[in-house]
Image (cartoon, rainbow, N blue to C red):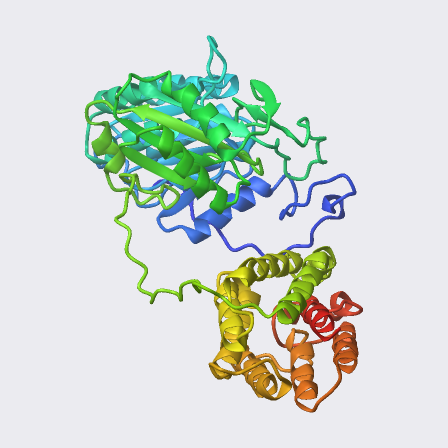
Amino acid sequence: SSDFCSAPQPVEPRKVPERFAVGPGMAKRFINGKDTVVTEAIDGLLASTPNLTRLDGFPDIKVVLRSDWDKDAGKVSVICGGGSGHEPSFAGFVAEGFLTAAVCGNVFASPSQDAVLAAIIATSGKAGCLLVCMNYTGDRFCFGIAAARAKNEYGIDVKLLVVSDDVAIPDAKQPRGLAGTLFVLKTAGAAAAAGVPLEKVEAEAAAVAAKVQSFGVSFSSCTLPGAEKVEERMATDEMEVGLGIHGEPGFKKQKIGSADEVADIIAQSLLKTVDPGADLAIMVGNLGAVPPMEMSLMTNCFLKRMKAKLLVGPAPLMTSLDMNGIQVSILQLGPGMEERLLAPTAARAWPAAVVPNTPKLLAVPLKEQATEEASPTADAAIEARIRKACEALIAAAAELNELDSKVGDGDCGNTMKTGAEAVLALLPKVSTSSPRKTFAAIGRSLNKLGGSSGVLLSIMFTTISNGVAEDASWSREVLAPAFAAGVATIMNVGGAQPGMRTMVDVLHPISEAFAKGASGADLAATAKAKADATASIRTTAFGRSQYLNEATLEGSKDPGSVAAATVIASLAG
């Protein structure tokens, strides 16, 4: 360790200054203030990551380095850095087998030459230092001057490598440095960890830098912490193609495409920079705000278009704050590169490079579902009632979605509509003359619906079917006990009771009233009244509503209850 280093000290909670209050034009961010966001983020990283420390130079010198590093142990120090806002780059990659230190500037601003110089002195011994920066004017100046000072003033052997992997702008004289820099750093870190001398570390890293290319696409720009929201320069149906990582405009705008179309653009732009048939390492990076599900989907698209020998990601690797975009880097593998990329590292932000997996699929271990009836016999009156109920549910989809948006994720109407459409589709294929066959078919169909509603309704209809004899006919005497058993089963399985703002608030009293001989009109009226009554239930310890406060629940009817009442009214009418 070094006299420059100190472990982060606990900080007492402080009152947020009034000037940092979110104004009407400001983006909402989890920050205390724009002037402290970087230093507080660094201390959070140190507190949550083993074997890290920093130089005690806040706020001007923000250098994260390995606390388990001995600069006199005869190994090369590998340092990189740049503006913050690209996390986990670069501090998140400070670890054995990767970076020795990372120099952090303010958000999207180059670090000072003093900060870079301090990092070099703190970590570099006789083995020397490989200093890597991305091709931006400020970074080149600061890192270049610091390297010269380290040599001239301290006698440290420093090699400077500038990475420029952007291929978005044709014939650019100064291509930008992008996420492909991480391939360079991983190679250098692995070589240094293996005890390779400085000249060889530099040569290996430079070979990677010469063969790595990056290209990005985004659906949005980004917003600086504590800054006012910037008017989006893209129309709602536009995306930017070939962009950097500092919120600057892309090379061009064009209409948003499907995932496959976006993958075509990126893959075609990258593949024309490599030799046909070359072994490739591919890195898929999240620029900040793309959901993990979409990142996995896009990775699948890329792998269909680019044959990868190694894959890194998908993951947030070099982000641009909250940018909703993807950046892909490809490396044409040369001698020794694969070994370096596969070498172990303690950097938790680095997803291990893997060989893309094509798994052998396993058979589904379930019994075959009942096949369609060869010659179903229909009951026109029953089929008409079921059709009427399904059509009523479909028509109520928008209302149910609106109700659900107040207490949930706003998709109850869509779920019920999908279920109703599935039931309509099976009507011609099932003997509606048989209650047992009809309920069994509905139960099987709703089992594919997904979500808790689909599962519970499938259980209810399956239970009703099991409670009806093979030769039973449609009658209250047959259906009432089976219906009551179905409702009791979903209450037992799901745990809901009347008064908990679920469909049980309607189904349970209706099952009781139906068994007691209530008329169709009375059943419809009871169902509506019970559904309406859920608007006055302001507290519950069940379902999604348990996470909402009284103000949110008050006056909002439960969408599941309204859906159940809609069906009851149609069947009873």
